[in-house]
Image (cartoon, rainbow, N blue to C red; front, top):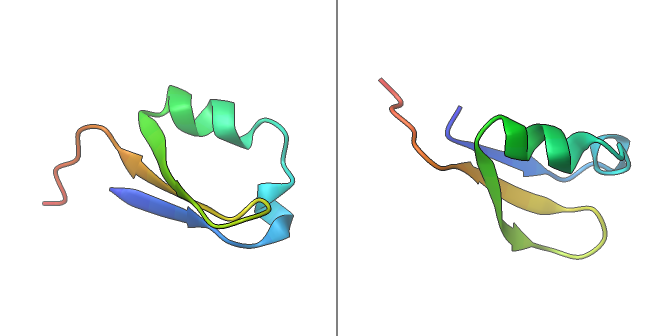
Length: 47
């Protein structure tokens, strides 16, 4: 998975989610208010 959108408060309210995504190689590239955000993987080969 090269990108992940966190849109639901169900997932956005998980306190450890940002740290876990960063540990998996993702960077928050956009925020849309509240807990909604877009995360993209540093290195991604979708094949």
